[in-house]
Image (cartoon, rainbow over all chains, first blue to last red; front, side):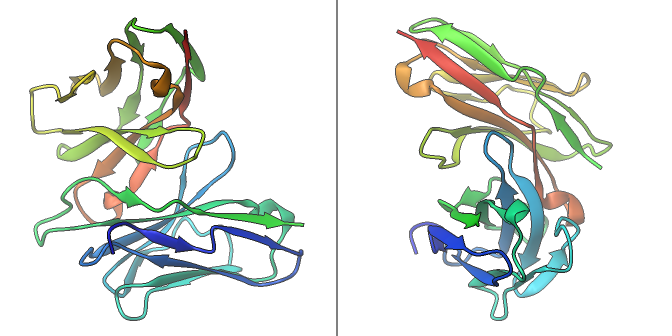
Length: 117
Length: 116
């Protein structure tokens, strides 16, 4: 697609429910990143993929959070048994990389705003 | 681990004037990228400018320019002829060139207001 697409744009859920957030990166982009951003703060890294391989998940806060990218394109971030502290904007970004290393900027989606009641 | 520091939480500038936003970073790498992103009230993330560490020349994009001091690990953004539409939160970000360091690390951001 023309840009990074995320869905849903807004999600309100009750504490204890599971949620799945979807990211469709720019076509051909190798790397896909997930970030979380609280209001008034900078984006915080969660995890990233090169193709279908999860390269780094050091930013996932606990085992309720998981992500997958099974075919190297669309990715899903899943939060199980949501808690109020999970409320935030969840952003996906993608990047076109070269075999020799990164090529530069990340292109961000508009984010999925999660509210846990 | 790489860190990015934006020590000024807020700044204000008069329309048509110039303002400089500060950023410092810490890294042991020699090859990396630096970015400034703008986040308006719509909360989009918009790339303003980028700098490759191996380039000595400071990047410029229209009214936006950077002062990149590699030895001092400083990367400030200068906005000339400020416009009302420049009001936003600005994030400085670092990206290494390989492996785990290829993730983008952000500073806490600075809120810029523009006075008419």
